[in-house]
Length: 452
Ligand SMILES: Cc1ncc(COP(=O)(O)O)c(C=O)c1O
Image (tube, rainbow, N blue to C red; front, top):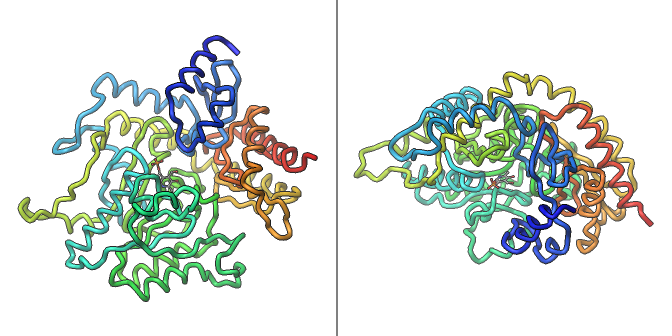
């Protein structure tokens, strides 16, 4: 290891507190210092190249060093790096809002910018609450969210989250809401089997709405993939059914596409698979192609208009973040959309998804793979100790990490969620790199789980 890497590693261990990381363990390992990137690869200070198998935590879209995004940011830096969106605007924020509305499902018309996914979720929750207040329904104070759902780490987002490991420690700080069953077919919380279940999990939402709709603001969930919950893929029809229930009981539908947005599931937005338009759409992560923080809470004219009035009516949405509509981030996002057009990214995705699905099918044959699920280029491979009884590996075995550590030796960077191996490469990944990612993951799972 070079002296430079050693020094950077020492500074890191001494001064940086890493997110979602047990620092006691982290400090015992040699540091990996990622210094540059190109295409689907990340390169460390020792010159080692890794396939970015989880898109740098689900944000990267076309790969690293994308000409359109690079030049959009460089051009913008020469003009202006930041100006507030409170009371004034800037060209990239204005142009991007128009572009987003052009590509969003029909019926959405207003873009509220924030910096990261969790903030955009907070905006959605507060906006939805205030909407009903302005409509003369202040008794609507609760949300319905799903078990295994994840919407970020701020307290509002955690309140509507459903992952015990991340969320239970903060329980006393959270607001109350209703939890509907997860659409987790492999471990169905209702002990049913698809398709004979007739989407009983969606009916779980209906049951809550039928009993409590007067006090319910809306239903918030991740369409098609509960990502952080373990890459859980919903059965077809779920989304449409919940949309119908929201309409029937007069509550808002909030779709969190922070993870699924920007092509991940094979369409620009996951809700397009079912031609569903939510009342509020939350976007983040891939919005800038994985370059800069930017998120958006996108809503309908109907919702926006409820907030209009004279200043002293105090209908204003009193919420905002310092870097909302940051021109560099918005320019990067415009560059991201330009790259989608230039590379025909969505069109080229079909053959990659086909390869992905074909190769993933092979994984099911492995002795300790209980379930393989995917939507587009998002996949979860659930490892089990015993396939027949679906017994999970004990957490202390850290089987997911054993697999990821082996993959790293073969220059593939992945990050598991417990016993679930997550694959979520940049959707612009070339076919050969996608094949390598799958091949290395397969052998890493086999070697780690079948080792004596
Ligand atoms: C569906 C979903 N919503 C919200 C978030 C939070 O986004 P951020 O980490 O940018 O705050 C995430 C992050 O993983 C997510 O997957």
